[in-house]
Each structure stands twice: as structure tokens, then as C-alpha cells.
Length: 214
Image 1: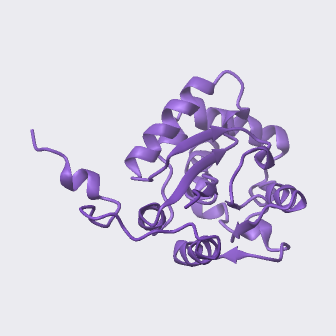
Image 2: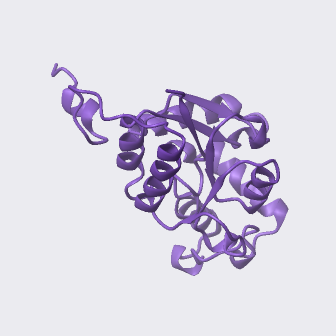
């Protein structure tokens, strides 16, 4: 059986970037977080941010506030990915987090920390922006330009529903339960799934439950 590779984006798909970033922007600007709507466009125009404002605040959030280590995870993400992994699907994390100058070491370290804390399973991780260059059988992303680029090169790509990508048609998931169903269907068609391995219990907290007590 060939490995079925699932290419998984992080921000806006596994990690709630909007919610985490909103808290930091509100703190820096001295405003109520509720004044910054979660229903926002890709440019954050609803928050009154120019491209320069966003770049400055994002870099501050990443390098000073260590946001990438503490973003909230979307409900059901870890459990769904564990079930997919148990079925024999290769989880490949693909993220474009290294576009912040002078913060690469922090971003890589905080990303791995976040994956561990959120109990996200993965076989490997790629830090790059040109996602069609990464070999996967199906991808999931929230950014319209990434979805468009992936599909233009013939790659199946699932849109993880966000306010800023509603113009896209095709495969779309509104929750991680829906993601799991879509990926399992595609993997089954490609003969890329297997029963859960014996001796392994289900659930994202399995490592914590089975860790020897000190």
C-alpha cells in the first residue's frame, strides 16, 4: 500500500490565528478585543490595519509575544488528525511561517512547541510558501492564493472555511469532522488507509496518558 500524504496548513486551519492575533493587536492598540471583528478579510482592513501596520504587528506578535507557541487550536483538530494518522495517512505539516525576518529560530522553535502542546500528530514538517512544490495527495489551506495555486497544478485542495475565502468553490470543510470525512474518502479511493494498529488507543491525549509517571 502506498503512503497517502495529507498536506496540512497551520494558521487558519489548525491554529486560530485570527483569535490569537486579535488579543495582541487589542493590547498594543489599547482597544477592546471585541472591537476587532473575527469576520475579517485577508488584509485585516476591518481592524484598520494597513499592510505596513500588519507587518509590524505580526512581527511583534511572533518575536516578542511568542504568539506561534500559544495560538488556540481549532476544536477537534488533534483528534481528527490522530484518527487519520491511525488509518495510515501520512500527516505532513506545510506552513509559510518563515516570512518574518530575523525571527526564523523563534518561529521554528515555537511551532514545534505548539504542535506538541496541541497534541498534533505529524510525520514531517515543511516551512515554505510555494506549497505546490511539496508532494502530497491532498492539501488543506485557508488562503485563497494557496488553494488557487495548488489546484492550478492539479492538486486536490480542501478549503478550510474562513470569512476571507468564501469566493472559492470546490472542496470545502467547515469543521475538522468534515475535514476527516473528506480525507478518509479520498484516501479510501486511493487505497491509502489501513485499520488502526493493534495496541494503540485512540485520542489526542494518548501520549500524555501513557507517559511514565515520575
